[in-house]
View 1 (spheres, rainbow, N blue to C red):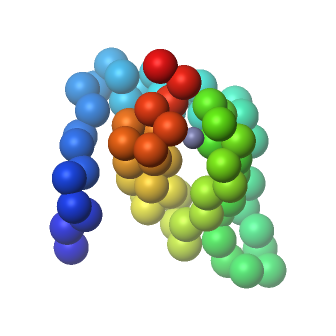
View 2: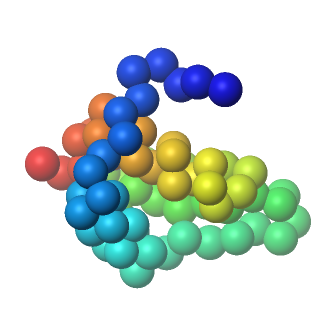
Length: 70
Ligand SMILES: [Zn+2]
């Protein structure tokens, strides 16, 4: 599986984003079986079927869509 133009951030950036977002309300919806949260930078709702995918979606979003507030 490949995602177009997906960039892997450097470990420090990834860790920082991860840490920041983790305090920002990643929730697991037991009914839908999905993880969801709002982007820490722009408030856009994000959802994913599992945490690993959520991390990818979030990093993709913050790096390519809203730029994480940078
Ligand atoms: Zn965003």
